[in-house]
Length: 314
Image (tube, rainbow, N blue to C red; front, top):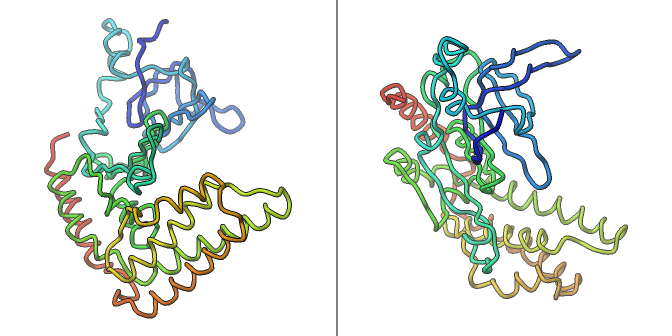
């Protein structure tokens, strides 16, 4: 069977053209089972991660699956129609409440060839959330450099002061925001706390230790990664002082890019990062941010969003 030349993105409902087998080659799903793509191939990979309604996930190649919509179009009664007509249609885009650009373009560290990385939040339809196996926590589409987290997963990570998550809430490049997304942005300060010191600074310290080991064993470090660790330290300290996350680092652009290009000696980079660690500690001592985020505000927002989802016809 020839496939239509289409790009399968994360969130696309697909039909397995082969039997899906699990441990000991046992049959888990028959040919024709419907699932949803939760991760697309990256680099030279050619397999899609597909999640079925019972929560079972399997990697399938493009030849082993078909887009549900196209599969339905090709069906002729009565063959197989009952097996797919009752599958609930799921459209990821219609569930997205917030999408922004992150990475170098948001930081102000981009160039003409820079990738455009997108991150976002989707609110799972009530029937999917209520189902026995729940909604996928995230969808990754490597072809479009995008990732979408289910709202509850996003809030949980934000409350833990995950740097990548918090930066999403303060991205200067917002591409889509629904009224519910606007409400989330209005309470984004509730996720900021002194925990930022542990997550931002702690991650940077652990990564620099690994870099020093790489320097000893291989004689080199990953310059781009080094640049982003320095940026993380700059951003974290500024957040503690300002009570907001200043995603763009224009004032430090040239120096950071020099690190990325490998133009600064390691001794200079190491001295800068130690200076930034000390400054981060000073910012912690001065900050007026609370010790912990506001869990109650986040919880109330989630409950409100879940109630809203029961009123949306998917």
